[in-house]
Length: 189
Image (cartoon, rainbow, N blue to C red; front, side, top):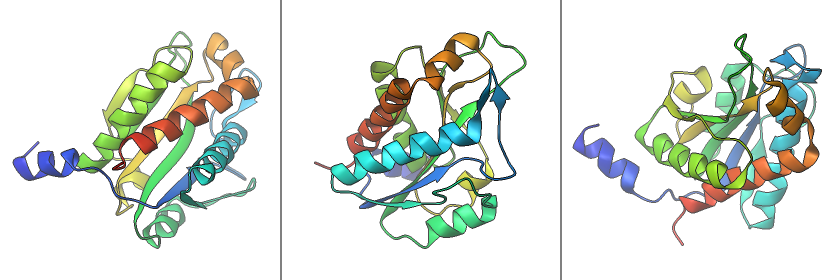
């Protein structure tokens, strides 16, 4: 990371709005494992995050509120119309290697990385299971959004133990609370 990028990552993130992207939807179910459908869990956690953020006085914009399909480009366009914002895309993972478990946070920019670090930290302290860490990625929603952006994979539905946790509304509430704590941690006091 160059000097300018390191300085940008170290600055507090000033935002008044969180654009919340519930992954998948409509014809795109996402991962389907252990009788769980990713798109439904994404929307549930997204709505929980929205409720918690509003209770803390932040504004929110949702890319979808129902089980509808929204193109990736459209998700980025929605986000890019919102000033003073950060972008949060919520997903769940799946893998043929069913022993893999844990949340993952993806970023693309230095400012996105500071957000990813904060969310990973609060996931580590706030939920069962160990997060797998933060990762640089070139996902379309991260590449095409113009603000600090992260994509959170809340856990592996392919892992039976983790799928059982993800099926529990109380666990999804803890995921939402941890994500919100991470978002709030990067804002100036």
